[in-house]
Image (tube, rainbow, N blue to C red; front, top):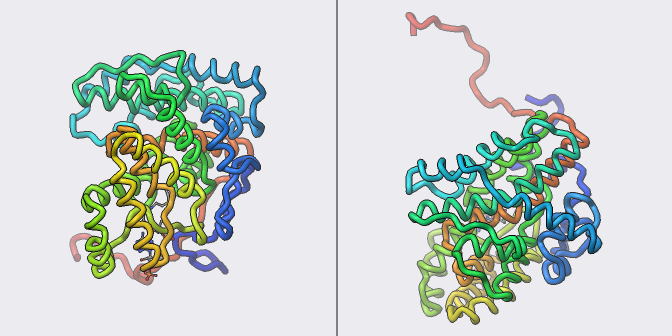
Length: 376
Ligand code: CMC
């Protein structure tokens, strides 16, 4: 029991850290990284520029960006042992579990692994961001009986990801849409996975341990796992004409509607609005407009009936699907974006650390006499 304090379920509204990274205005539905509006960053900056902003506090100029991109490209390789580990994993291993193991293995091979200094953390952030993308794609290829695709040094981070996934160079439109979605997922202050990385960091543990924990937290369907669940819902609905029946059943059975609702945003999630436009274009261009139409119809119907807002994971589902990303890679893709924010938060936490250690409200039995085993 914490003297004088009261339980706040789910830590709703609790301010757990100071941060210069992300300004989330839930009341007005606004989001900015380092002072820059998310819409400007998604439309006009690359994911590399956004990662630089999160790790350095400022957008890079051209020479800084060139050096930074070279650093990311030179980190585009993973240890042979990690690929061997992927081969030894059961074929049915879900990609987020494989990713969590991959991050731990990357930590075993990183030259700065236990160095928690600011400079070492910055170097590790760049390496782990590049390597996470490679690990996701390599595991996917290996589980399908294919060889991993060697990264292309002449492609940007987002385009290279799509290339490593399929072995085919993506169109400029697909690469831009994917790049913007990585930016939209890059950072979101004290969401559950970022908070997890902060808690682990606060014990003076290291970056890879914290990121592995973040992957575990992101996986759940109330967090990043919601995107996959949205796509399963859209596939279950199947046709625009079936949205009405689905909605009636969902409301009658009080079903939790994936991709709807948010702990902080009340008026709307600004990321969802941007992703909606990107999903519309990508679904049209890929000849799969039906998924966008089902999404919009479901959105309108659910918002009218329950007042729930679509969150970031709602329109990213038809977008990722139309980009050809397998449904069980939606959450790893979110991790590939959020890695920028996780690592930035880890750096911030290490730079000004105090152990995160809240209290619990005891609700068990009162004090009682111990009974030895023979008399129980
Ligand atoms: N479907 C049906 N009812 C909902 C939903 C939903 N998606 N979201 C909230 N509600 C209802 C809930 O039943 C509750 O009603 P009542 O007060 O009558 O019991 C009320 O709204 C408050 O819900 P809550 O679960 O206490 O709210 P929360 O702040 O704890 O949960 C949430 C937020 C995101 C977990 C929740 O909205 C949810 O489960 N959404 C679906 C999963 C999802 O899309 N998650 C992604 C979140 S955003 C991206 C990310 O974090 O990665």
